[in-house]
Image (cartoon, rainbow, N blue to C red; front, side, top):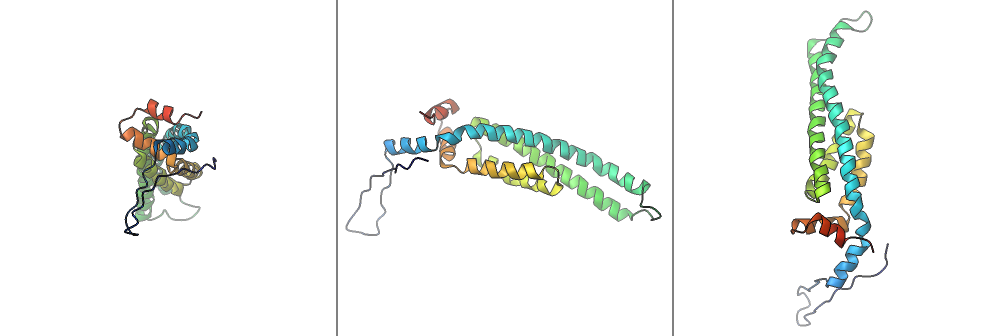
Length: 188
């Protein structure tokens, strides 16, 4: 990290010690700040790719759990433990409901991740990306996609909360193109 300090021009009103001070950064200071955080901008594309991969895995898992919700009840009725009576119908319905609920949740989260991945490539929807990273932690309860979801959440949040990345998203929302933003943050 660069140890250079960004200097701001301060105008002080000596007559009122509680008056608001102007901390408007000068263009050179903004350029210096952007250069310090430029290395994080390529990570946004990586986050987008990882979101697509994770969404695809969660989509498969959700579909398998929904199909399994119909299959598990039949399996519980046909193959009770040795010498034991079949489980009560309420228990079978409860287990089927849990499978169906987790499957539907995984599909909703996967859809959110696909939309967030598009936001990574277009530098739009930073809030949706952060939401999808946190919402993806719900799949950890299924046990199947938990480790990759936690890893993606940590890595994604580190990138998304970086000041340079936040500024890049602001620049696109102000009307600049993705190419202009990447050019502004290009390392020299």
